[in-house]
Amino acid sequence: MRRRLLTLVFSTTLVALVLLGVILVTIMSSLMHTTNEQRVAATARVAAFAIHQQVELGGFATAETLRQFVREDAVLEARLPDGRLLRTGPLPEGASYRVTVDDGGVAITATVPASADARRLALAGLLVVGVSLVALGFSMLVASFYAKRITRPLEDFAELAERISTGDPREASRRYGVPELDAVAEVLERGVMNFNALLENERRVTTEASHQLRTPLTALSLRLEEILAADELDVVRHEANAALGQVERLSGVVDEVVATSRGGRGTPIELFPVDRLVDTQIIEWTPAFEAAGRSVTREGATGMLVEASRGAQAQALATLIENSLAHGEGITTVRVREASSWVVLEVADEGRGVRSDLEARVFERSISGGESTGPGLALARTLVAADGGRLEMLSARPAIFAIFLPARPVLALGLEKRRVDPRATGPDESAAERRSDGLDGLGRRADDQLIGRHAVVSADSLAEEPEGFPTWRSRWSRRGGRPYGN
Image (cartoon, rainbow, N blue to C red; front, side):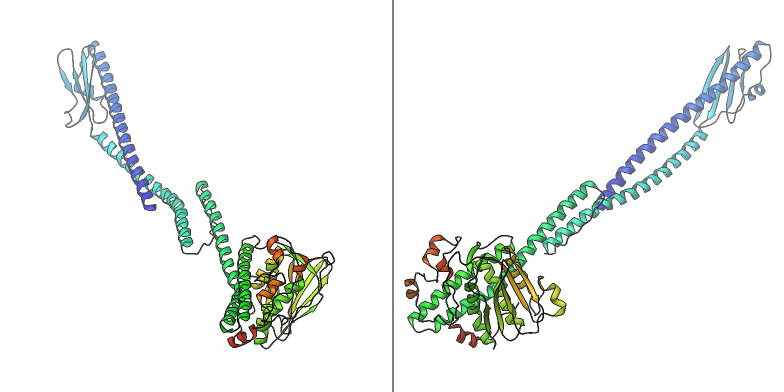
């Protein structure tokens, strides 16, 4: 495009200069012709007047008399009343200017050759050509500057579009001093920023989903293995119901992660007991800790209520327990306590804690004490903050992380305070027996289903004990691995 602009400017300027030069040369030629004719006519009039006066006074005019009035290379001819013809010299050859003046019977003809005008006109033409070349060169310099100024933004825009198409949408904050181009650059910059935000959000959704789905998928896989290995119908029914519960939980995890990452909410806020939340997580993580030669226990207060998203806080607590399993040592303790208007869930272990170089950045995305990308703590903090709580690191060595959730009075619901034993529920409890207690195949109360997922559950269902997972231990041990970590 730059070459086309330069070619266009060069052609336009050249045509304009040629036309201007032709016009100037024509005007100069006309001026020279008029000036020479006037000069020759003036010489002839002066000579005619002088010869006429001399003849009137009775004088005798000769060629020498005419030479007194000759200027430069002019030739004068005089035809006197007595018929004589006087001439100052031979007539010039070629083009010439010739003017005749008659004064009282004396006719004077002045002739001047045009060769001098041709030389002057040629010099004037050379001057016009030189000035035109200088003007043409200057116009090309100016055109080159502005062509570069115009085409550079277009090249930058093309480069930006190429980067976006290859998945590298880096922002390019440039201004070019041209209002129209700057407006286009500003619009593209906003578009790139929006594209970057969308791309980063989708990448974060993918990372967080893969991180949070590992535990439910592993649990579901273990349940299906138990079904394949079971010989008794009651055990198969029990494990199938548990597997259906894991599928429902898996769906909730997906909704929660995607909605939270996009600034929304996957599950509604509800009032539920902390005991059920903590005991369920301990039940689920006990096989993994036993497979690693460790244990997870619960301490502290019981019977407290919080108003939050049950699924989101389960994910946050699971992340803390998972990090303790992956990076900690010894016994992992989940401690429940009350602090003013907050219910605090602390997760601590007996390991070396968080490295000093990670203390200030432990909640940043892509920060991990292990070999993974480490989105867990950042996501957990987002989930807790969405419910009006906060996730803090109370101690780096040993590592103690705490979830602060808004507390609600217990006496308002008259809840029965229970302590859940992870092994209290065995495979002998069939789905039919749970249905006789008012539970469906997934361990949910019928009144919960009638009210709906978005309602606050009843007091009895809040205190209901979660299903145990006693048959995980053998299958988990046979896996021989530790699939957890931040």
